[in-house]
Image 1 (spheres, rainbow, N blue to C red):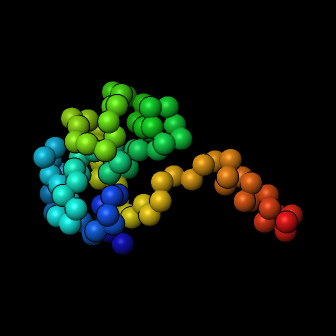
Image 2: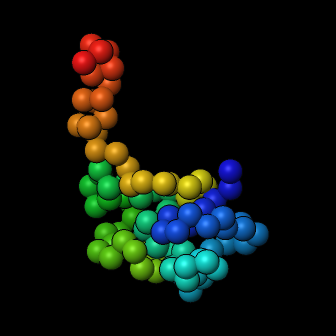
Length: 96
């Protein structure tokens, strides 16, 4: 599966670099934003796994981050809460 919009799930063609003004052809939301980036992770400091990236307050709108890389697959839902993931694993282990 190729890249997909984090907002609407529409398939995205990856023929060229994503520019700051590029938008999803289906929902018209910004593509060069934190929520579309492979480094976005709501469970880490500043919600970004790239340690050298500058803090971006608005994660859903276009920005000038030099580390941006379009996420390669459909997210579906936001990153799962680590506590919920551990709880689910323990329940499966003990067949609760």
